[in-house]
Image (tube, rainbow, N blue to C red; front, side, top):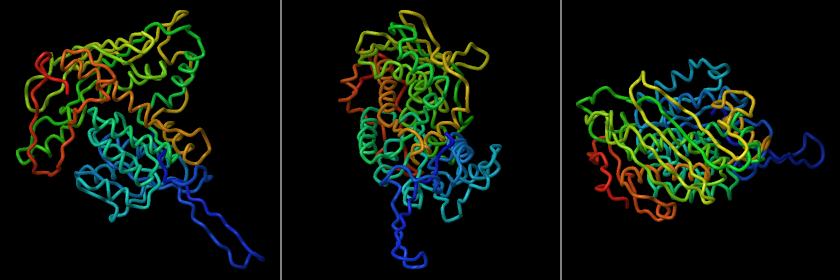
Length: 423
């Protein structure tokens, strides 16, 4: 969008007058109204049944007892059915018997998310392509559901601010919000970041973030029967409005770690990038294949960020580096290895819901990391220096206002710095 998504807790408060056999009143305390309900069963719904959602559902069920998957939704029926079959045949122990998705809870269509949220669930897993995250998260908070939300939390400033507004409300409601930024649940990172903050490397003077990897190409060709909207969903990684570009969809992992270390977001960025390798063909859409960015934090510290997706066989590097006045760290070398972080994040989430661990709400922090990444993308596209204040006032809104499998949707040209205008 992480193996700990269970329906939120149900508490039964029992009062009796006189003998045990006498009248006993039960009050159902809805999960969203209180935190902490022991090991009561939690029910989860999955929205977005692609590869990430399929994995996340298994990791949730594997990592937690008394959690069931009871509803699923996707815009494509084949995605949903393939996902369900894979979850039922999971390589993870203890998953199959926790799958309770009956035929009446297979929801298909652009409104499938509403039907999942209207089901009897406590946790919703938001694992669609990221363009939908703000709308779905807002609806989940309105429905008072605990949330596992895959990163990033949007693809443009207007809708990330929409997510931020819902995140504030989720905090007021004490809803648990776990992000798919799994390094925040990875013990090596958690312990090392704590040590950095405790002064293990002295004052932070510089930071570096890298995701130098390989392309994500989901379709080798377009089926002639697919209209624009269907095509762009089948090949979503190639289109800015639904993906956000690599720096937003993927490199967020590394940039989020540096924001975590720094305790906040940068205030400005100058970036550059382009499509040196990606051919100008339909399946490659309108995203860049490399972006380099120089971020500045409020205290003047710079983060150098670099991401690229070039063909396999070329050098790769997925890492972070923090340089301090007394030493340096890769942000995980002062910690100990533990549970798979993709499972641990779900364990942490369920403990938060049940009141068995710290309260977790990643809504605002990871939304800020998402906005940080979009800020760099817009700088690279436009060639301009972009500030945080500009992002928080930007009118750039990429999200469609109508949805239909048959709908035409234009693909903007690849951005050209100096020509592309940041809104």
